[in-house]
View 1: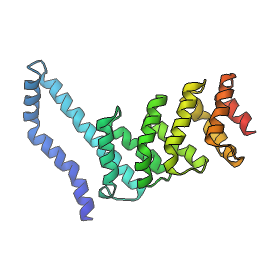
View 2 (view 1 turned 60 degrees about the vertical axis):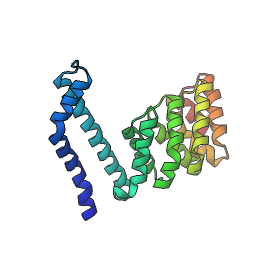
View 3 (view 1 turned 180 degrees about the vertical axis):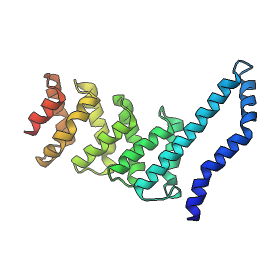
Amino acid sequence: SKELAREESGGGFFKRLVGNYSGGIIKALTRIAGGFLSVGAAVGILKSATKTITDFEQANAVLASILGKSRSEIEGLTSSAKQLGATTEYTASQVTELQTVLAKLGFNEQQIRAMQASVLQFATAVRANLADAASLAGATLRAFNLDASETERVGSVMAVGANKSALSFEYLNNSMSTIAPVANSFGFSIEDTVALLGYLSNAGFDASTAATSTRN
């Protein structure tokens, strides 16, 4: 209970800190901008930064709840989200959304940390948002009974399929949930399945028709 109280007090401490120093921060921002930045704009920047931090903290609280752990117990995921947010085109909050989607699919903390970089690469390659890319990659792994370590393989296969045929991320997202479980039960690999969908998409089949026809 003491640990949870400390975690809950973190947001209050930050707000008090911002409140105590907001005047000085606004003045500093105004000086840095050489007088071109109005006080109103500086206040807007400060509010935006505060909201960003609050949203990130809330997202991590939700993630911890899904994993059945405390905030301190998922510090590895939190740190990795911050690192990826600082070194990629995505924000830390977006990375946490990715982690949350994978957690909802039943992946544990260690698996999520092993998967997240590959999901980021997949999302970038097919121009999808991280949450959607994580959902498709994670569900596809489950459908083909693949280990989390196969995330790079799955993402690469789907990215190549989407970029080398008439497939798109939306096409894959709409068809894979229908075809993947049946394809796996008949011994088709992820490569076989994506190749087949690519041929069908090139022949003019829409995602729903291609998935249903192939399943049947």
